[in-house]
Length: 441
Image 1 (cartoon, rainbow, N blue to C red):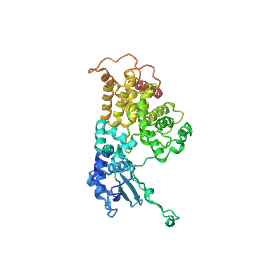
Image 2: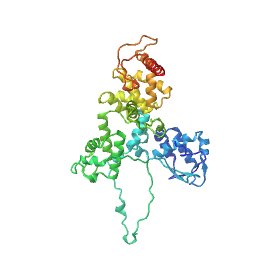
Image 3: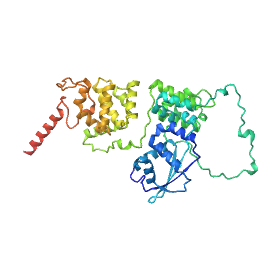
Image 4: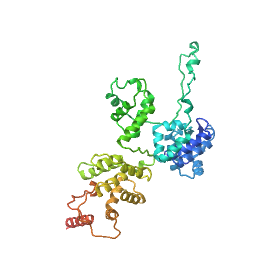
């Protein structure tokens, strides 16, 4: 959190966009809480109980005392509520600031399950069995509609505009936010380049369809070229594109390629884990190369690292599931997981051995390793112990003389590595000491 983003003495007022009912709270408890966490859920309840149409002003100290949370955690909880569409925030003033919080009603359950981001996010959090139970709990019985004909009249069937009373000027309307904000830059021009008008009439790409395409591309990390195939699979009616069929086509295409769901995680508290790499003079190519590797490890998806280590081959579902659990369940930073992937696979003949990987992961978690660089240093330092874990040794034994494959980063770059030795770091320090002594003569 930026230091000036939120302070305990900052004032706030609250209101609700619409009455929040007990049914709404049940929806937030069962469907939203697994996504946003207990602290954000408690903050939502607290703001709802304090709402008074912005009449009374409080200091954020009140929230800190009521929730027993520091201001940093309150800010993070607020950010989760804003991102998921349960809270809107305004600020007035710079020095003497007041925040205005508007509590939002959650989506109706059927709309929640129809949303591709929220539904798969929930599935990833609670698992298949619990997800099916929740979906069944909130499902509505519509079997009676099968043999019935709907007679409901539309607005234009009943009402006609009175043109004489129509205003010549349009009134300013306030936009009502019905869900969470979603901003993803998808290249629709590239998408349409490969689809001529005959295959995909442009009129079918309505605002809702475009929004769904962008969401699905973000969720599954698909390129416009991937989405071309998915859209063609979804088009079965020359007059419209079904959003439900579009979602199903995307799910089917994804299962064919990976058979694994995409993990979505919060980045509010993860930004400090990313190593900020500054430019390095050209006369230091070894350091520049290490920084390039760090950037790759910190910014690449673990699935891509699995694929790269395997020479471009698609990873097996079991490997993806294991890596996914490190990120989503054990909350390990992505850069740390990527170092773990490289180290374990290159030390176990290109196999992501579950027991070995989990043992190292638990060690790094206890050490609170925060980034790729720190993980690389620890792997070098504890390499001998890790090799004992790998071979199942409980006592010290003579070093293995066989040359084994290691990640590129395993050797430091101060000087070329001629031959691997269990005491290579000590030998390097001895040589540096001799060079220093020679210069001093």
